[in-house]
Length: 531
Image 1 (cartoon, rainbow, N blue to C red):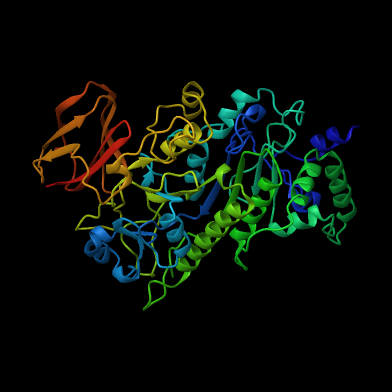
Image 2 (image 1 turned 30 degrees about the vertical axis):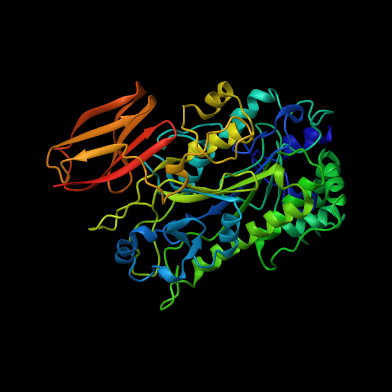
């Protein structure tokens, strides 16, 4: 029996060989979870890299990007955990929001023109289960849709039909994707064999490249485990190219110590500089499920969440500095995401519960620095179920990065994303065919066009909605206070002009509702009270 057939017949699908190849596991990306499968452009059409930073657990957006514009309402909603306005970090040219005081690294990146903030990112019908919400983000699916492919896997299936047969080859000799650190419900294996590499932890990476073997456990299965590791080592096609890439880099810039995310990003920078053609790197940092003790009593600027944000901020800043030091800053762009945000109201345990929309960050030298979206609306009479309405669908961010950073053409983009999602002004002109700078979206302090007008407000039965569209794809939705989509009034092509539509909300219970309008790259969300 061949070594390959032995492994395929002896190891169950989706099983990770413990510390295989000295900690580099060949882990599953089965047909149900192909988020990172194959994200490579053939033949080096460009040498750009996308780094994805997952903040696992559901990051609290309101204490990350502080809504200074509505500060009194923010304080009212979070009496025991709000961040003092004087402590929030100011951003150059922006007065309506601030960053958590522990995020000095990202503040510096923003002021240096290397950070973009997208406000209130989410999707219709948000799911508050960690596992299901993560699957939705990985598959780029609707919340009621279960896909057996991922958004990146669908794209690369178009580019590399039949992978992994005949790979690696002269055109693509390197791993298709590399994940550093374990990610809940994610894996890196195709239907029959691995499609990428997973480095289980940074220490194992250095053991691997230095030919230091992790000792097998002293159990009855120890010899068998050593044998499987040896077989894996012999059949691992990509091991040597990783070692070569690692050996090409002798010096890197300084990274913070005792920072697991920084340790992961340091490896990513090293492999990119070392010449790997890998286009996607995935890193993970957890702990954001802050139901309790999110802040310290008496000092809300300190505590668990402050430590988490400080770790993320300093790691990304060090990574960006290292990319500049290594001379590869032009090639790399990164994004953060978390599977959901937190509720508007703080709870009685100095924490926050599972919520809907939250901000995310795009970082890199080629980002168009700014803020997309407006300060999240916070209603007056809040309940424990109230959530922030989403302003931008997370799939719009994906579509923008695929189109305007990795240069995916429109035909393939529609096949990958399954629907037509608006693209956002996230990248500088010249990267690919980019969305141009839009002042009302880029600068939250500028006067935004009044795209929609609601009356009467409050309303009892019929709500009249007037809207201005510049033509093209136009969408109008009604969202309830929990963040769930109630009604899509229309989603179609419009001619330019001013229009009016009536919405019958007589059947709705009293409370706060949101009307979300989207016209190509523009969007606007307004609140309305039903009485």
